Length: 484
Ligand code: UDP
Image (cartoon, rainbow, N blue to C red; front, side, top):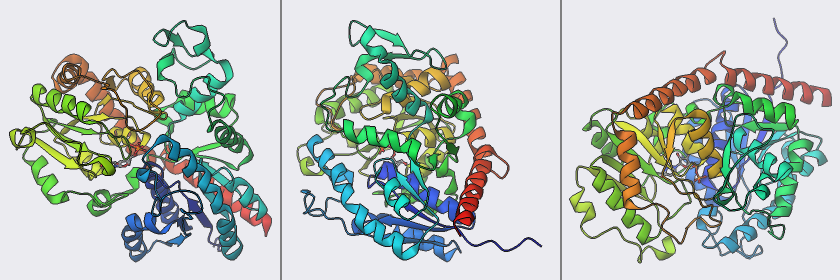
């Protein structure tokens, strides 16, 4: 008989932004499903979004829980109740928010002292957790929440500055010493050459902690981006485990429906609506948990979708402080009845994407959305706006070849771009191209479906992600035993 091993206890500390919290919770559940005790650290208003689903997990036998730390909004110069990045209303507030996170070190250390976990998995935007963990002799794992491809691109740009060799923002250059012939334009890169950017210091620290931490946990799977996984390990010398797509840990409809937040539409109504449509006949349009468009852009999207004559589900997010001003075109919703379903605020995205009626996903290229689209085996129309979304777009269009761009080529600092980024005509054109029966669309659909199958295999017992998680837990166990 094998000797009984002590149960590992792992802390999970996500960034308070849905695109980071959602996959981190999935990771905590994945660990718990493998027998570890998982504790998620968060703040009161963030816990509200997922407390019910954690309760369900507990009832089903997982050893998982939440520890709450108050968010010192007022001390940090943020409005009362501003505990999540979705509540930020200007780009200036982003830095204030990130700086406020340093205030969590002391309360986190108190929790480490009290609970003495074996490891902490913390978001990239909490680089100080490496020091906090060190103070307690435990390893910290970094969680990025993006693709390995994107991390490699960022490193390449910092290392070689290839954008300095072109004469204009729109001239194409190829990333040097990089797997594949990957083309970029300067206009797609964020904060180009801006050494004064106040986030630069934070980014430097984030990059350093990749090397000083125990390693990096990736929400990706080896078969998706093998050349970049190797590049990240071998060239960039990062220790990494690919354990995704972690969304696949949600197997019950209730978990898919309420993942991250409660949907603002009844999921049964939404599923019935999709049931009434033919397979692959609906396009799902969503720009993640943060991006917002102004009225002019909403109008172009509405007209483009109407002109394409394709059924759609469109998630419209608006700046809550401006909701009064923003509107869809007059009579649009009535005209589209039966043809288009508009969800204001929050959609049950996983359920929608998994429905066979959905044939394509127009996405802002947030990494979770891309992975969820891949798991559902649907091709993508890529519409990046900010953060690392352009990197992810280039992975989809140039490497995986499962999507076509809407054509926005200009990186925006803030989540709510001022300009119209894609016109009605362009939107109509790409939707018709990818929802049609042409060879290009069929090829992409085929490739997307194949990748979806590989994603599912990766997380099954014996699959690459399953095995990577086994090795990670084993390494943590060995590390923990050495300390005893
Ligand atoms: N999401 C959702 N419903 C919505 C909008 C977003 O369920 O209406 C989920 C989506 O499934 C994904 C996450 O929120 O898991 C968004 O993460 P992503 O990386 O795609 O983009 P971000 O919000 O970070 O820009």
